[in-house]
Amino acid sequence: MANQAQNMVDTEIEHLKHFIKKLGGKNDKGQYEVTFGTLFDDEEGQNIFEAIVGTLKAAKKRKIIKFKGQILLKGAHDNVIITLLVGNEDAAAAAAPKANDEQDKPKDAAAEPAEDASASTEQQNNDA
View 1 (tube, rainbow, N blue to C red):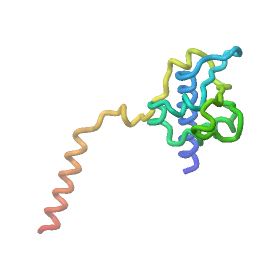
View 2 (view 1 turned 30 degrees about the vertical axis):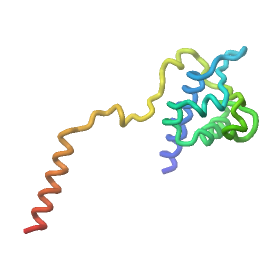
View 3 (view 1 turned 60 degrees about the vertical axis):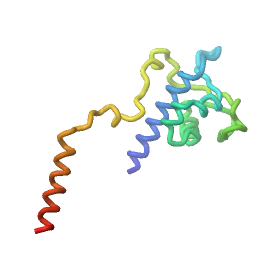
View 4 (view 1 turned 180 degrees about the horizontal axis):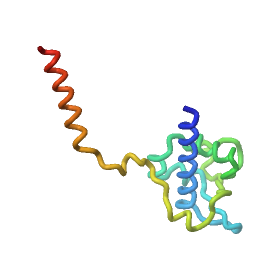
């Protein structure tokens, strides 16, 4: 269970890095930066992140990003700059992580009728 949670955090941080690159720009040190308000208000990002504030906190703890303060709140911290410390290479910006691998997998149409057939057979057995 702990590994699953860790993998989820790792995935969220990869998404965060992608969105900082997508929505932000480079500073004079070649690091991507974006304001919290821009990141928070992005519609695509809202659909991907479970809890953006928690993801930011985890990424800061791992020294992947930096920002002033301990936690960022919508409204009060919209202009706070988030700086990407790791993965500022331009080639990485082109490779977007997938939001949900399950979305890309085609549904197995043959599996669905089989489930319905077994339920129907079970119902017939119960009726007998």
